[in-house]
Image 1: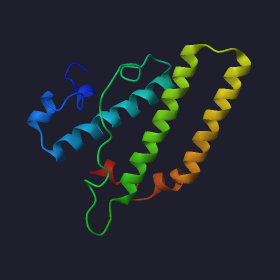
Image 2: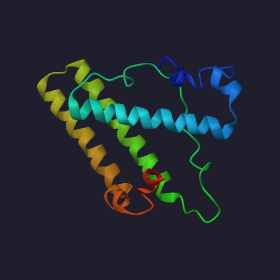
Image 3: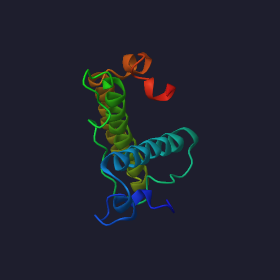
Length: 142
């Protein structure tokens, strides 16, 4: 965070905004959001403190249309990014819930609600089949 990546969109005159065009800003935004996704997963898998998730950040979501060419070959990575972002928000809400330390009954209700949101997101965005499709994993091969 020392590089100011978490403040990309804090002010129009931020360091990055002055030195970057729209495409470059979207690349930086996507990088931040993917880093945040990785941070949440690392926290979930390894029970380690978040490096970014708890920090205040001011970064807009990147334009999903920036990578799309005329024949829409890039739909898979765009859908994967949007769905992964939704899952990241649910995961962040889960960690916020744990930080509030609610009573057991309330915790169970809230966790079930978040699990329902995850299930719904997985079904709506068809994440399982997308993750195994050539287009869904294309960004990781480049």
